[in-house]
Every structure is written in structure tokens, then in C-alpha cells.
Image 1 (cartoon, rainbow, N blue to C red):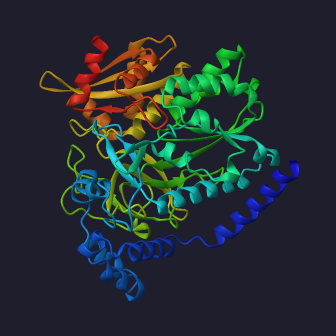
Image 2: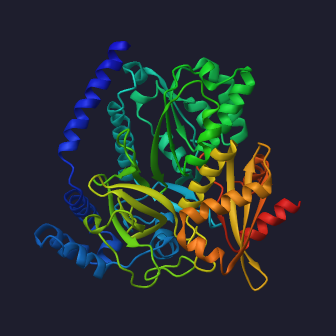
Image 3: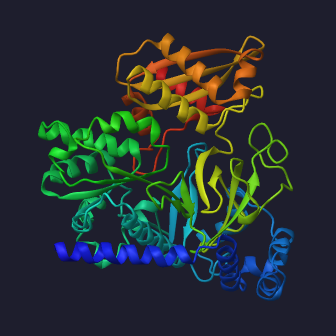
Length: 513
């Protein structure tokens, strides 16, 4: 077995060298665009928006002609527009709507800002693209010199949705993590945990219990999942076996591959569960596709997946393109990968091999290294607070929570903030989830001070229209209980960082009960 690990690691290093030589962002994106358009040109969508003309421009036109025509021919779609006009037909079983053939799988997603369930098509091409990117991510581990060859022989625990998908009107529905886990290749099954039987369990609490009972018999090297649920699982395992750290059960645990939310607010509490440091790798896997992942240990962010079924566009996230509520204007400025600038914030548009076209995914990102196409997620187009011009992003919130946690020596597992009225002006009400003892007034003052340091607009508005900051400290369990009450327990569900409109009333009603 040691020989297998050594062979894998050496092969991984070689593949990384080859891929680095080939990196050219614009060339890769043009090639992907050409493949997508060629494949979808005879669908109903492709015929409606003249994909044959776009294909000619991509193959024979000048360097930028294809993109100018794409912007002219195809409007931007949010989920509601895409579903009402096109994906509704796909869901009903109609073939060749936005991608060739029938779609048999749909990822269910509600995000964190909308109550209605979204049905995101997952085509065969997308399933293969996600598998390819997942393998590429594993290959990047060859750049992490601290990881031994034996790691590649250990188990990989993937904590996701149920693989027992719902069947409805000729198609399958479920979490994307459940869909992808149900399609893992045969060669990977020997490494995959919790195994097919437990992975099928739909009851989230029962699934965690079953994993906990089996945990002592597994030799886990990698863990993959959303930080909150992985931390909760590790705490259950530690308590069940009455040990000090998770390394008493899994001594070879070396890698945590996380995504979905920023890891920083969880880091301090998470590391209390470890006996020694492990390697953290960030990923950006959405229901619409595998968008980016961390490719080397010194990376500031995650590298966009530019050559595997995704074409990216970027909308500057500013007042010229978005309203104060995060609504996109009718004809925003859009850019390709070579036109972006480091340090600026963009809303992400994607066109994919699942038949999404100029699709506003709802996330905002910032480029930290344009040469490597490395990004960090800064929030959501509608998950920020700007009641009076404070422009407070989720990125600001995560950083402030991290800094305050470190200063006070506490672990803040969850948090959310609501914008409220204060007489004729405005205020922010923070709800902080921690099981550590902390003075709410001191927490409020430190949080306010950090946000002023991080965000100049916030500092200005605190002197003018943003008149008050309040903090309510709650047990972490309160946040999970609220998610359970909404049927949102599970591997891909996250607590919203910003509460808006009706969700504020729903949350407050839950707390009052």
C-alpha cells in the first residue's frame, strides 16, 4: 500500500508541472465558450439566441468578436427568469431545451435568501465536469510538501446530502452533494466514507449518529464538508468515545477540504478539536457547478476552473450596476477574465454545460491574483447591508468576527445581522452564536470598532445615519434549531449571514417562542 501512495504522489507532482505550463486564462475561456456553444446550438435556447452565429464568431472572428455578439444576443438571466422561460420545460421532461437531451437529475437549492426551492439541472456533462475538477483538486495535494505519501491510501469522509434521491415525474431530485456522491467512480469506493448505506440516510441527525458509531473503525485522512456540520460531527465523535481530540480517533487526519461559507469564523473552535495542525483547502462548489478551488499551499484564494465546462463573466459590483437592494440594472457592464482588476468586487455570471446561460449565480467575488485567476468569495449580491450607504459586505463581517473572537478568546460558531430602523434613522442588530461566556456589551463595542477599521463607509455612517449597534448572544444550538424548524438541516445548508425583509420577522418569532 505504501508503494501505491508513493506512485500517486509522484504522478500528482508530474501532472501539476504539466498543467502549470498550459495556463492561459483567456485562451482557456474562449475554448470552453466554443465547446459550449457548439454543443447547445441546436437546442431551443441556442436557436432562439442564434448560437450558430456565435459559433462562427468564436471560430473565425477576431479575438473579442464572439463576446461582443454574445452580449448582444443573449440577455442576463437570474434563476426566476431562467426557470420560468426555459428550465420549467426541462423539469417537465422536455428534451433539448437549454442543453441537448433530457435532464434526469436536478439539484434542489434554496440558497440562504429565498424560501422557494430552486431546481438546478445537473446534466451528464456537468456530472463528469464536477468529477474531473474533484480529481484535479486531489492532484493539487502534490504541491503540499508536508503531506506524506501514505495520505493517498487513507479514507475520505464526505459529509453531504442523501444519495437516496427523490424520484418525481421521470427525474431524480436531491442535494448536489447527494447526486455527486451517488455517482462516485468504482475505483474511489474503497476510500469513500461513510459508505453507500449511511450516505443514503435522509434523516440528518440519524446520519450523524450512524457515522459517529462507525467512526472508530475508519482510518480517515481527508474530511470534506461545510465547516459547521464537520465541527458538529467531530464534537459528537469526541464525546461518544470520551477522548480529547478527533486525532485520538483518526490519527492520520491531515486535510480538511471546506466550502460553502468562510472558514475563518470557525477556525478557533475547530482547532480546539485537533491534536496537531492539519492542511485546509478551500473549494467553491455550487449547485450550478464546481467553480474554483485552492490549488497550492500559498494561495491567497481559489483558482477559477477555466477549462472545464464553465464560461465566466464579471459584473462590477457597484452602484452603476446594482441597486441599493442588490437588484441588477437592465444593461450592466460585463467583463471577461482578461478585463478584471485585482482588488475590485464583481458579481459572477456563468454559462455552463448544464444549460445555464449568462446566469447570475448571486455570489460576489474579488480577484486577489489576476495572473493565476485566483479569487475570494466576498458575499452575495443581496447579502450585504447598506441601509444608509455603509456597504457592509459578508467579507467584512467574517473578518470582524474572526478578529473579535481572537481578541476575546472565544469561539463564535454562527452569526447573523439584521438592518432595522432606529427612530427615523437606522441600526444593526447582531445575533451571535457562541457557547463561551462573553459580555454582550464588550462584544458589541469590539465588533463595532473592528468594522470601522475594515470599512471606511461604515465608519462614516456610524457618525451619521447608522445610529446604533446591538448584540444578542445566543447558544449555537439556537441557530441549528431554527434551521431544523425550516427543514434546512444537512450538508449544503448554511445559516444566512444577513437577514432581510420577511426573514427577520420569522427569526424573531422563532426566538420569542
